[in-house]
Image (tube, rainbow, N blue to C red; front, side, top):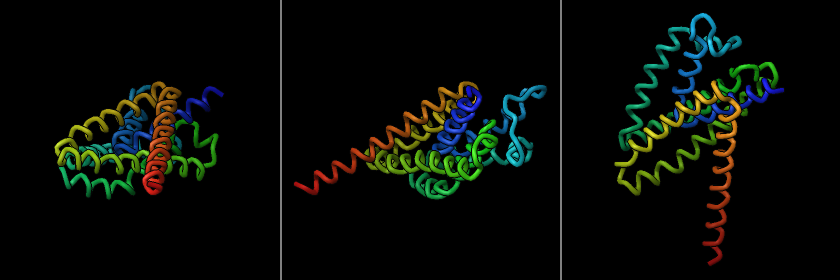
Length: 195
C-alpha cells in the first residue's frame, strides 16, 4: 500500500514538474535510473528504460539548454510556450506512466491520460500567467519567472524521486490552487457581466 502511494506521488510530482519544464524531470529520471551505477535510484520498466540510455540523456541535455535559453527571451518565450504546449503533456504522460510501480498497478492508458492532464494543467496555468507577467513588466520579468519555474521543476522532480508522498501532496495542492484560480476568475467575469 505504501509503495503504491509512493509510486503515485512520484508520478504526480514528475508529471507536474513536466508542466513547467519538460526536460528537467525527464533528465532527472534518466540520471536517477542510471546512477549510482551499482544500485540506481529508479528502476524503469520497458519501454521507459530507454530514458536511461546515454544518447537520450545527451539529447535531453541539449534540449534542456535550448529550452532554458529561449524561455528567458521576451517574444521568443511565447513561441517556445506554443511549441511546449504539445511537448510538456507528452513528457508528463511518459513520466507518469514510467514512474516506479505505477505502470504495474494502473492501466497504462489511464496513467498516460493522468500524466497528460497533470502536465497539461500546470502548463495551461503557466500559459495564462506568463502573458500577465509580460504585460506588467514589458517582458523584463520573464527571465526571472522562467528561472523560478526551472528551479521549481528541478526540486519537485527531486522530491518526487526522494520523497514521493510529499511531492504528490505539493502537486495536488498546486492543482487545487489552479482549480480555485479558474473558478474565482469565472465568478469575477460573471459578476462583471451582471453589472
